[in-house]
Amino acid sequence: MSESWDSLGPNQVYAGDNLPILKSLPSESFQLIYLDPPFNTGRERHTERVRGVRAEVEDGGRLGFRGQGYAVTRERTISFDDRFRDYWSFLEPRMEEAWRLLAPDGMLYLHLDYREVHYAKVMLDAMFGPDCFVNEIIWAYDYGGRTKRRWPTKHDNILVYAKDPDRYFFNAEAVDREPYMAPGLVTPEKAALGKLPTDVWWHTIVSPTGKERTGYPTQKPLGIMRRIIQASSRPGDWVLDPFAGSGTTGAAAEELYRRFVLIDDNPEAAKVMLRRFTNPEMHFIVK
Image (cartoon, rainbow, N blue to C red):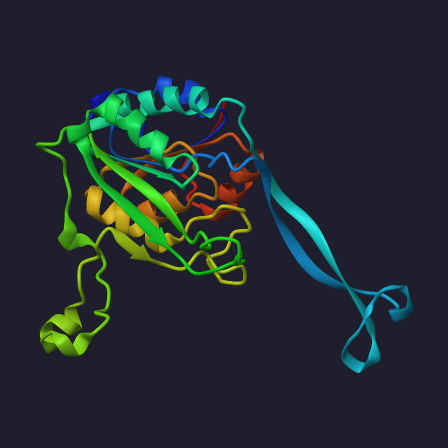
């Protein structure tokens, strides 16, 4: 790890455009880089707070407890724009910086969905080299609406690349294990230990009413980030997330004794992370 980078000290959260911030960081400084950029869905993403207010039934309210009238209101809380006229002119220079910042034995995880992941694979093969491709992880979940016009889309794609295909760090034994689907088919010792995950990860999204929820519209589950960080970094290593959102990468890194740099240009994301991280030695930097 770069001596000049280590001298910077504590974990850092940047609020601002990630491209100039990435360009300012020392080369080959991060063991693990996780990128969860906007998916280019073509729409504004937002969360809403749903609450009931008093309303007379004749004014459109619903009859509720003890005969009182209630109406449901939806209050928009956090939003960001996920619409790009030229998605690749936005993403490609950031991926080039990520390649520069990745340590010689480091790994990069790019989290997208079906809209752009196939183009991203072509781009990363050209940028890293096809032999640097390690995995395509399918994160499958079962939540939300179900169209009847096609097979409902219930997974994201995570592309995994190594800086050097002959020396990258990967520690499968450090990963939290999963229960066997048919524990009776293995020995009691194996059933108690659990099995190593494959490249298909069944993991629920963050519950809208769960304790983990921060209110950020694209928050990723802590369990997903724990698995990535456990496998592809060591305690004390630096982890980078240029599209940090709610800060789940930092929360998992802190829990696993890694150091981290988080970047996001959404002021609402910075507010969420300020609430999430209470370490007084952490640096919050506005660019």
